[in-house]
Length: 472
Image (cartoon, rainbow, N blue to C red; front, top):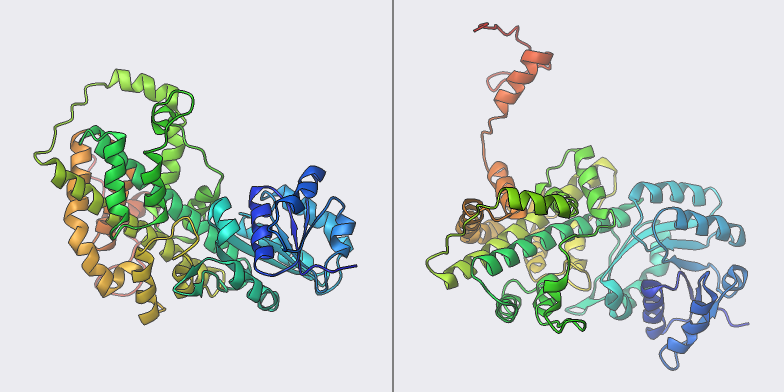
């Protein structure tokens, strides 16, 4: 019986497309799904002359694979992954490789690595970004953990990944569950950028009174220049999509309640746990939660409805300022996410190569952007850069856009237009670039009511004061 090079478990949209991508690049692939219909349909949708087999039996699936078996899981994170592992591990032999390519929580991956290692099996966590189209034609792939297993998978991963300047958008992300961690932070940055784009959109439609055709032109111009990125590109296209039910523009028919799958929240929780400031990512998560309070927001809008927008003197200048503000706030969001990876790499001994992270994010993934080329250059020159804002070339870009970020934030505040992402990006920058923060007062307060102690600026050591009350 013919033996297949790779196996994919989970033949939903992402799993099926990734399987076809692997097959298109010259590898033979077997697929398994609990839904027998998906297994039957798999071979029909494959590219002609590729070697693909659908199976509806886990035993048939495992026996169809060459050894060491290389199995990729494309199932929902959490209990479904554990269920698959429980069913499949008794069928595997020592040395076989299982790769979780879903959005699993990194600590779950650490547990699974240990559990499978005790049975002589290799287990890896691997982030995959690019959506269903990326999975089919070339995603950004973030594998981490077992280096021996990675080296066996590397030729296939480099074949199926997106390419930028002939280089594959995949690389080893580090030890243990580093692959899942990098993907988690990728998604956190994604949350922030989407929030910032939505705020820029809100300013352009409410202040500049741009209709959808005009918004299309603005985003088209932005995407053709220094802001070229996947998220700007798809936003441009959204403004042209008509609704099949009403023949109006679809974006205007969509309810303003955002969904979330949890990776943004995990990013915020992780930053809190290991002590990293990522306020723009945090506020993007919070904003999605706030959007769900639709009924309350409607009541509050009626109660506090006295908002009056004062139009700017020059609409064209305003549009340019908003664009520059969006560019800089986006850059700052990347800076926050990358700084979290720096700290996590130390905290969990991941040894994450930041240069390779931004390199593979340049193509295939949701947050791909030409801006990442500048980050790649910065990390190439200084791989140990703790924050991208400390790079001299990046600082010149920041300084050229800073006035626009300040004026856009100020305009939104003065006119009562929600701009939580823009404001937190600016607030983070101002705090990060301030030599002396007013936290000395907070330390005094903590020592006053809780004897929490403090440090001094003029000598080493830890101090406590018996504070005097005036009783006035």
